[in-house]
Image 1 (tube, rainbow, N blue to C red):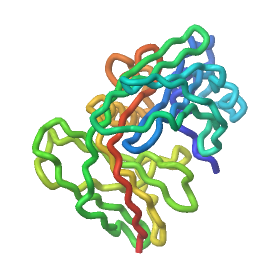
Image 2: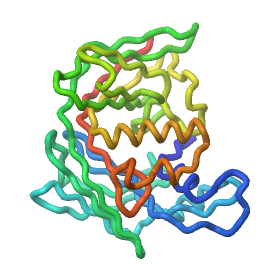
Image 3: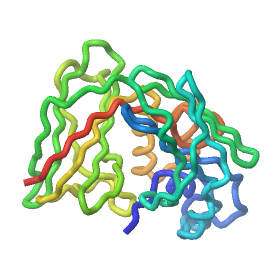
Length: 276
């Protein structure tokens, strides 16, 4: 089954509540974007869908894509208009990207998106990556495991961490890992982050889903505080069925002005482990 992207979930939650059967609410521009150190910008752009009774069809998701939107990214030296293209790793299956900009730690990146009467912009910085000291598996039951990521936090405060995983044969892109985020506001020096499950939106959020025999790629990231708060509150929203328009408030989380969603810079390190 294709994994529904975050942007589709936000579009649904922002536009409808369970059991809603009244007039369609105002639509929103929804932007999900990131740039990794050593990688290129990726942006998904959509218009929220006035779904009823909490339901949404694949056709509606595809029709919500802002194909004719204009998306650009600036690194302070050049501004590049991103190219829109089909990409079936995502649902909706369309992204904006470019190979002309590559993420560099310490640099600031600004995204701008225009579609219909919408105008959105946000700025993020890519922090220096922090490498893992150790990566190992921890049995949770006879057949289910978690992955432990051990790392040493730099001495300066204000470091934030997020993990993503991709399981060979299951995931075609990196998926957010449930509860796998940490802030050095609550620890010093060496710490371990537990990856207990991958957020596949057709599965229960907090149930272990890493199995014996899985080959799992881990993307361990540093990020800024705004990105950290976005992911923390996004999971609160998923766990409580809260209204997405609160948790995606542009003044509080995600860093976007004029749209729902987020624009994130990641200092990324990559690892692979086989669960045995």
